[in-house]
Image (tube, rainbow over all chains, first blue to last red; front, side):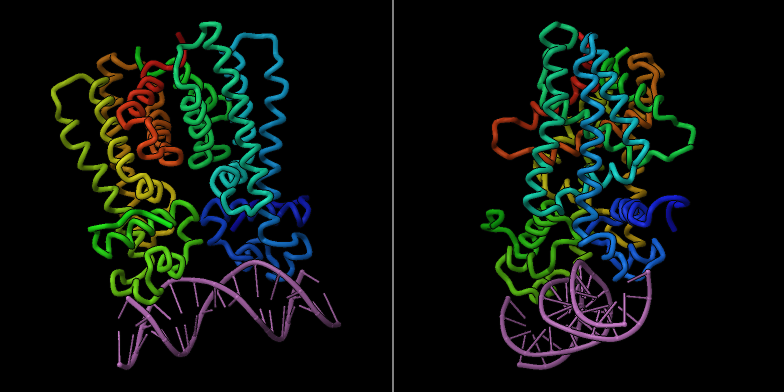
Amino acid sequence: MGVKHQTLSRKKQIEQEAALLFMQRGYASTSMRDLAQAVGLEAGSIYSHFKSKEHILQKICFDMANRFFAELDSIETANTNSQEKLELAIKAHIDVLTEDPAETSVFQNEWKHLKDPYLGDFIKMRKDYELRFKQIIQDGIQNQEFRAQNVTLFVATLLTSLNHTTQWYKKGAGYSSAQIAKDLTEIFIKGLLN
Amino acid sequence: MGVKHQTLSRKKQIEQEAALLFMQRGYASTSMRDLAQAVGLEAGSIYSHFKSKEHILQKICFDMANRFFAELDSIETANTNSQEKLELAIKAHIDVLTEDPAETSVFQNEWKHLKDPYLGDFIKMRKDYELRFKQIIQDGIQNQEFRAQNVTLFVATLLTSLNHTTQWYKKGAGYSSAQIAKDLTEIFIKGLLN
DNA sequence: CCTACCGATCGGTAGG
DNA sequence: CCTACCGATCGGTAGG
């Protein structure tokens, strides 16, 4: 059961196993006893590393949000056209995602178990992230690179599709991060028609 | 709290409220007491309509699976080209989905809480559904209507995107089922480029 | 359909 | 980091 640890701190081990279990069973269906067993401890011992079950979820969700954000910063100011900006943004997103699929899956599917004020903060961050993608698309429509369309729908569809990669991606299974990004990019940029 | 009932049977009321709560909070985070309260009963009373909590989930998941399946039957044998078959399949899927967004959301997100043998059966049905979409795409590539690509990835992306509509669709909010189907179809068929 | 209850399991804590 | 435990809540049942 579980991830190779080696030099990881106990806290990081717990976080990784938690992400894995939260992805597989869901946050609510994963007990602290399940998690403790997966990491080789007794249930009570986890509380010397995390104050509560929800704090583990918070750490996973906000760390991932920050990583996705960080990647966008350099792209938006790049001196290039909209299509390449979008391609870079997709590539960056897929890179983070393939590095930590379990954490990304939790970030996408389990955030609703956060409680306020964290829940509100998280929703705000996600909205910001979408907004920055929308801006790239909007600019591309303005300068006629992209076809006019429902930008909100497009971005929601795109981000959902990217994030769904976590559900089938297997590290080291031959389908590389770069290839996934390329294939997904072609679907959304070129479409289906010949 | 909840849906307008009117002439619905008690059993159907319970099923609808359950779908709503399972969507909002997740299956594991929804207690039979929560559900009972939403439908105006005591917890124990639900068991005169459903044998267990999981039976409610089963009913929702398999009923939706059957409805999605039924729509495909007539489309596959239609005497038309691949593009129109795909458009019809998308339209049919979105029609079912907008009719019962909560049930569809549970069908998409909560099925993992089913237990064998139902879990295995459900996974098989989903795979079959994907396979039938894949066949449409495959045929379209063969006859050169569609561009060659990773068909598995395309269909996974398409179905995920369609199903995600449940997360933001609001009945009677002006964005019609037909318009959603049309916009999503254009994204996947035409792509982004002008 | 309700009341009253069951055994099991949950998140979390004290004390070492 | 473990042992031993807490109060709360869970899915489900009996009996009416």
